[in-house]
Image (cartoon, rainbow, N blue to C red):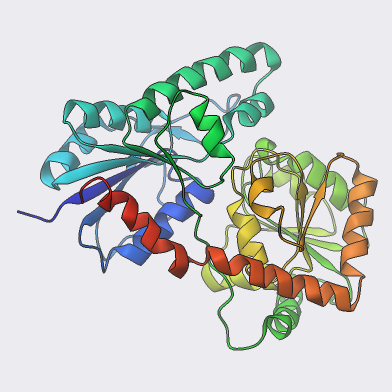
Length: 382
């Protein structure tokens, strides 16, 4: 018989976000060496990842959500595909990365086939729903979501969270099987020291995107959408013409953000191209309050780039002890711009911040946290 398998379920697998990137990096790191097989089923309209080696990723053609609800995202169910994978691949655990239509379908099929379920809690649903929907809808939707999550999590052997303070939030749903697991991220691993690497990368990136090298470069990496508070980012950009802004990502508000002369939106970048932009940044800015950990925040630190982020969100617990992270409490554009200038014009202190950022991120390097991910599956018998 084939070795036992883990089936990971990801809604909206065609979107570029922290959940999907994390799933793919785990898969790429594990697949050649695992004692069990690892399979992914995701919903979406297109594949952003070509698996030419292991043939274990399936993207289901799915129904797009109406654009007035949320543009560019898809709903999938995949009953036949999930059942076929469970039966033909000796699946011994179903890991639900997202509680969407595909996730709830998979949890039902896992239960009737007596297969253990593991869930990952990735989203700050209270903040997310409040931002995405009018108040008249957000209250009942939050109530419904809590009922669904409670049902899903109570049927699971284990719930993984990437921020320690989320343990209490999940416990408040009446669920006790919660484990904190640090998220893994890519960090700079070149031969040059981090300060020299950043200087070289800035020259390369400024030449590539036709920025003046004398100006400071502020970066943002992530989805360009309402829940990431892109309106605040645009206000900071338009009121700070003496700096350049490089935005790496895509989303429903790409065109809205692209209409500023000191900002370039690159679209989605991967690998060395993305790492080069992280290194080139003098500072990373985000106004998002819906993060549970802020994967891109940690990757930015891992390339020696200090952060300016909101003090609202679950990312605060992870980042509060890093001296290279600066929090703002008011949505004041002027206060934020003053803070950015204070940091990047601080001379030797600024280099110290870059070094401290890089040092802090080492604890989240994939090579350090990957074994803990496999231990989750061993705990349930794989």
